[in-house]
Amino acid sequence: MQESFLHFIWRTRRFSHQHLFTTTLQPVEILDPGVYNTNAGPDFFNARIRMGDAVWVGNVEMHVRASEWMAHGHQHDPAYSSVILHVVWLEDRPVFLENQIALPCLELRGRVDMVLLQRYKNLETNKLWIPCAAQINQAPLVIRLNCLDRMLIERLEEKTELVAQVLEANNQNWDEAFYQLLAGGFGLRINTQAFESVARSLPALILARHRDQLFQLEALLFGQSGFLSGNFSDAYPIALQREYQHLALKYQLSPLSVQVWKFARLRPAGFPTLRLAQFAALWSRSERLFSQALEIEDLKSLGYLFSADVSEYWKTHYRFEKKSRRLPRRPGRAFLETLALNVIVPMMYYYGKIKYQSVYQNRALHLLDCLLPEKNQIQSAWDRLGMSAQNAGESQALLQLKTRYCDARRCLQCTIGCFILEGKSTGF
Image (spheres, rainbow, N blue to C red):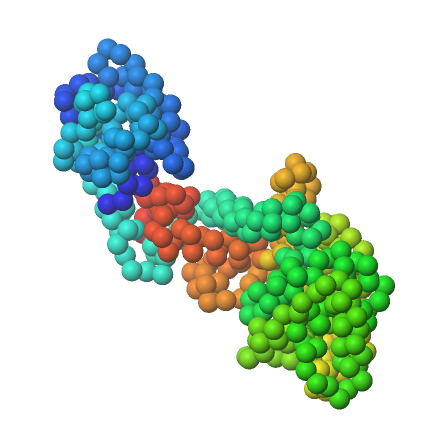
């Protein structure tokens, strides 16, 4: 049994209240179970408990076995000095506070309906892809949608943690933070770190000074990435090489090693060289790029922002001196949607949160509704259970549900799991 089951039956009062006594036979009445605490400290705050003739107001701590109080070191933690009642499944030993006064204990073993207990054990121990795979479709649509709404917000909050870290590293400079995060997005996992390293070593302010010269932007980006360190026969990379040497001296730049870049298992359209060319084209036509990104509302405005064509050389090359007949002039829709999902939406959402401007948070959520759902193994498994995502927001929510709740067996903290556990599903 997990402690979360005790939290569930306590906050839902799903236990017998008749002839309720502490383990020392003191009569108990639960006037208010308190506020559930998901952070450090006692499990429930500000509970109101009548014990004997007195009403106590304070915190409640819960354990499967009473001895866990000592095992967790609560006897030495001042945060637990205001606990008025210890609620356990089994009192295997009494607990004493620092003043050697016995802590009142309520034992719930024998007070929980056996049917409810069996439902819980089934959810906890079955080996299905998700614990409620056999019952999830019995939950009403409104319950499932409410669950997904919550999961999506949690997912966004997790993604904005990276935004907050990058923003702090850049002294709250939103433009610089967006530049670095967007660069990482152009790397598409396999080259994310390399792109981020280029962006950190080449400030956006330097690129802004050369915004009107695509050739100089390419010289800076390709030079700083290490791609101009070889010997060339084509005139264009030779010219870029010379330009970078001049600019590197001017701005005191040191290039990355070209060895950090990965090409294996990538199609030419995804090669980092072509992505760098597209990144340069984006900055050549976009002044105050972050401000423009904040105004994206749909796929049309997303596509417009990234509509700059690469330079002539990259229309026929996917690497230096590697010619090809047909290459994309600009990023494709799938790539742009990935950028929006992983960079623009979290940045927009966090900006609205920090600036107390809900219009940007709502715009981020609306943009997710416009994006296609992701295609991966997790989503395919949800499809087989009848939980198909209609847009990227729903696929992100389902990913959060699976990885943060189902895999961790956190059924008692899930709206769908609680619905099933309370017996409103008949699948057991």
